[in-house]
Amino acid sequence: MRPAFNKTLVELAREDERIFLVLADIGFNAVEPFANEFPDRFFNVGVAEQDMTGIACGLALEGNIAFTYTIGNFVSIRCLEQVRNDVCYHNVNVKIIAIGGGVAYGALGSSHHCEQDLAIMRSLPNLIVLSPGDAVETRLLTRAIAAHNGPCYMRVGRGKELVVHKSDPDLEIGKAITMREGNDLTLISTGDMLPYVMDASESLEQNRINARVLSMHTIKPLDKEAIISAARQTGAIITIEEHNILGGLGGAVAEILVESDCHKVPFKRMGLNDAFCKKIGCQKYLRKEYGLSVEDIVNTATSVTGKKQ
Amino acid sequence: MNSDKIEDYKKLATQIRVDVLKMIYKAKSAHIGASFSMADILAVLYGGIMKVNPSDPKWEDRDRYIQSKGHAAAGLYAVLAEKGFFPRDWLETYYQDGGHLMGHVWHKVPGVDVSSGALGHGLSMACGMAINGKYKKKQYRVFVMLSDGECDEGSVWEAIMFAPQHKLDNLVAIVDYNKLQALGTVKDVLDLAPLADKWRAFNWSVKEVDGHNYKEIDDALSSAPFEQGKPSCIIANTVKGKGVSYMENKVEWHYKSPDEEQLKQAFSELGVTE
Image (cartoon, rainbow over all chains, first blue to last red):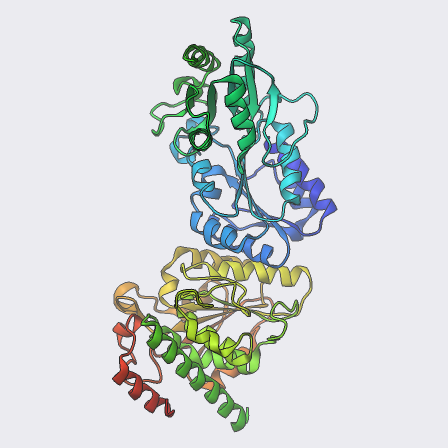
């Protein structure tokens, strides 16, 4: 996903002279093509995320489109007040790119994990919050946020995530992509849990459970219609995210369900269970440790489907 | 600079102080001392230095002004009203329910580009605006007013390091060095001395002025950039509450608003009848 973003940004910068990249000393072997081709629109501010965000805001106030870019936690929480007061309050064209959502930085530990960002970012007025499912969605969303007039936050994977889409889907900010039709329950995935969720849906099929899969690449504005249709038509919902179960995709979907007439459907949030990492390991290992393996999704789906009335 | 110009600056600065007094008295709000310490600098900026157009506040070639010390909004609103950016009667709505003027600097007010209030944000945004000026080969300058207490924020020093690295000589930082912050003297809370040397050590070109001497302020602001290829910093030595004897150098006038008796005395000291 990260290469897809960087490649697309270079293409966009060729088309639009307003595009700047402002980053905080992260991006070795990833951002050089932009830096080399557009040196007067590339700023490495050093290890200074607050300054990065303020500078991007100043550029955007002057009519430019400024992308900020560093590890997920640092581009969001480290400089949260600058994101809130400078970017969102002024409602300007700053596009915040969070590299390595969830536990993508694995064995580096909790300081480098990014498991609260979606909850925090979606509470900021004016901010669009995105979490694409693979490199294809990342490429299309990078174009979409550059075209969107206003602040955006996009969380992408660290590198070599699996590509799920075999061709370009119709992709629109705020509209879930139906990856798979199904009637027995709906698995709502965000970010690069998507390949796991797709694999889980195939296993479920063998057990004669026909799961609908939605790739919810936009956390805000959330696709209310797709969620309510899923509840009515499939009667059970599971959300899957590499994020704290509090306040992210699961919380957002729960809000929609509770305020609708389909709040009694069986519903389960899968994610990181409101705790910092207690284990050391790569992303794949940690996903398993924290109940986010394909098998965990299959088991949860089987259990939730059994609760349907 | 001739004496007429100095007289004009003085007149504008007095008007700013009178309006701030009225606003803060009516609002029963705070930060009068912080508005008074920078009033003379504001008078020079808006009375003679900055290229701005009140009938076209977003004019592309205007000089930019960011008041990073957002708590001193009353001072900025006063000078903007005086210059005609918005009707003077808006000043009466400062801090009032449903009013036009928020307590801290607000970007919805004509003539204001950037909201502030949370300290330590302005200089970074100013750097972004200065980069744009260089990129688009514009002649505008970016002025940013910082408080001394604000320089406690780490984010200020991030931006102080950035600007010389990128040779932003279209950027002018002014530190309103009144030596008082919310709970005491700067020296006692978190000493900034030697402040000018610190900025110099970070590769800025620095001048120190008496922030109540119009000629010194005008000379410094007129001559920026002080050196080609370097951002300019003006350390303005000021007095918090300057202009009203009982407020000067008193830490409590960071927060207090005057009562009726104090208001009358303040008007009298400023040489106005009401």
